[in-house]
Structure formats: structure tokens, C-alpha cells
Image (cartoon, rainbow, N blue to C red; front, side, top):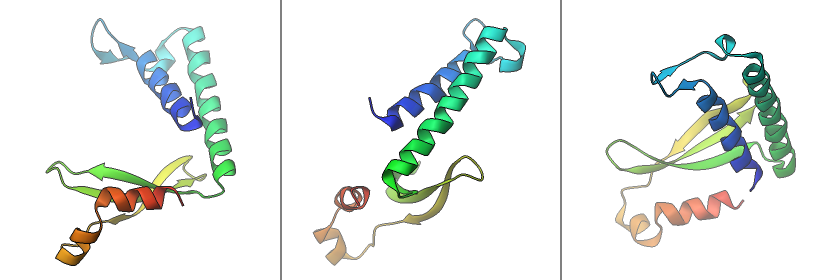
Length: 118
């Protein structure tokens, strides 16, 4: 398991802890028992530490994400980790050119593969 996957799992665990399967409602962590509250807070600490480690290892706060619109078209989103908000913030978007020359030479997937490895 890599750091990014560990962060995703910890976030998912925190979300699941607040979900009541009997009612389908979200139960705020503040209303749960002390053990659940402690586990939730420990996960937040771990997420923060892992995110910081990820940034320190990469030495690059910027990251490309491949996204899909509701209409099915794809685009690339540039995000960066902001310590101010303790999370990722969108910087900008890249949409493929409609020019035939570009479309014949590069696909969005090929561009994404080149960018994510830099």
C-alpha cells in the first residue's frame, strides 16, 4: 500500500464511522462514544502526517488529476497541496485542443502519463 492509498483508506474509515447503516443517516462524531471519537481524531492526525510526508518525499506540491465531466468528456486538473487549508486546491484545468493535428498526435491519456511522471 502506498501513502496516497493509506490516506484514502483513513478518510474512508472516518466517513464510515459517521454513517449509521440502520438509518442511512450521518451521525456526527461528536455524538458517538469516546473510543470512536479518539479513533476519528487519530485518523485525522495520521492523514495530516502522511500528507506532509508525501509532500516532503515528492518535493513537488503540484499534482495532475484526470477528471471526467458529467457529459463524459475528460480533462486534466492541476492541483496543489495547501498547508493553509490542509488539503488540495485546484490551480487550473487543461482541455484538449479540438485541432485535428493535436488530436491525431496525442491523446489525453498520453499527455496525462507524461505529466504525472514529472
